[in-house]
Length: 278
Ligand SMILES: Nc1ncnc2c1ncn2[C@@H]1O[C@H](COP(=O)(O)OP(=O)(O)OP(=O)(O)O)[C@@H](O)[C@H]1O
Image 1 (spheres, helix red, strand yellow):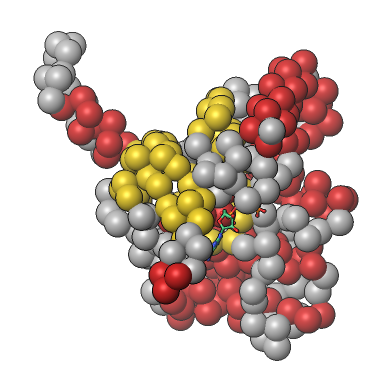
Image 2 (cartoon, rainbow, N blue to C red; image 1 turned 180 degrees about the vertical axis):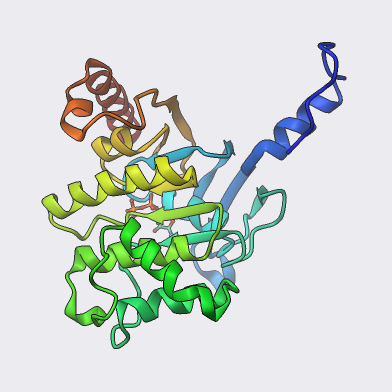
């Protein structure tokens, strides 16, 4: 953490950008991404140019029309793809898969024949947590995602919603300070999805983990995010970048959704998404 200045004098101009950079968990600078184009294949410019700074503790939700490059941006931040041009940094480094971020996909991608506890235990092992601490950490993580009693059950014996909870617990088990979530609730029924949204909102407020969450749902963006970025149609560019200044704790989901600010944000973001799709 940068030390506080011992005088109230303004810092040197040269210091200011450096401090801002080091505070950003994710820096995306003038990034464009094009797929394909080799051996006569048609190339697709999916994204950009896009610039975004994501500070610590932010829950940023990316929305936009289908095919606008939301997943591409997430994959660049995860290190699965290298940007065709521009720069992506995570914690000041070039991202590498599995190094800086925990990732949750639309499908949970768990080991189906293993137990819930084993799936979490493996992630803890990969994260370097000593064997003696793993059982306690597993219990804590499962408690956190509302699965306290399922540790001994096999993945194929639990519901899709429960599997997605395990996937979130597994991502948290890695102990990463950045979580990347690509439409994690899209395949779930409406009720399960609402419950998971509420729980993820609580977990995020409790842990303060910086998160980037991709969705098609404007309501999900307003409900979950501290900030929403709307991307325009392909190649995706930032069409709207708006803070969500709603209370993070102490307000129930119905109360939150009943706030006039909630409705106003939904309307503004909804309009931006519709305009982006034109
Ligand atoms: N591996 C790839 N090779 C070629 N083109 C790709 C590849 N991955 C994505 N694309 C194309 O890049 C564009 C952006 O895709 P991307 O998946 O990032 O969009 P998205 O906004 O996440 O879409 P959706 O909301 O439908 O999931 C699309 O036109 C897609 O077809």
